[in-house]
Image: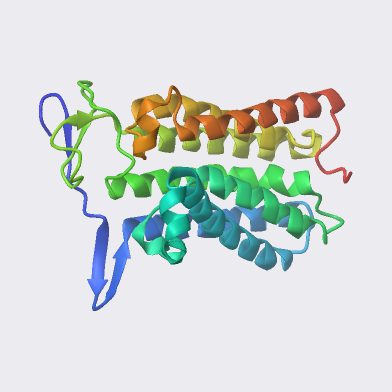
Length: 271
């Protein structure tokens, strides 16, 4: 640690066994699903829903997050390359996942899941899932930190990080933008979890989802001002791709909050 910055030299790899390498990002990604599943088991028990349904829900979620986030990255940030090299879309191990694509994948997959579950409406499921997704966002951004990726802009703040393992960063102190997002997701998780524990039967449908969308993507628009752009084409834009994609999600979140508060119906009531 220097006087004005923190030297960040974390190794993204935990250990290797022959051709198999275990990385912090993968472990944190898996941990997010594991803890999220434990939380959902508790939710289903408290609300007398079949726990067996969670196996299907977990499959929907894993596929939705991986496929949606990967396609989102390819189509939002470098469509020309990936449309010319479509097989590279499948190279998930090379990195490149977009949270907006993951969000779209989850919204669509839960529609497919809930349409065959009359006792688990679309908003009922999403209101509870966003609690676990907020925690997952915390873990995933910690994974980005361990990878020394999605780095912030240069900064002279005392908590700025020097990303020694980021080849393109130089030795300039930078905003730890990954930590900013990780901590904001952790705060959201704590708030949603405590609210659910206290008032789950009185919460209007769609309220938790709306709060999640406004908080996560509203703050995403703020945190982007502290980050390096992910693609060259963003350099000339007033707002980068992450901010532009966040706008409709924030608007949708505001609509859900207003709608939920206006109707005031318990989230356990099935539409």
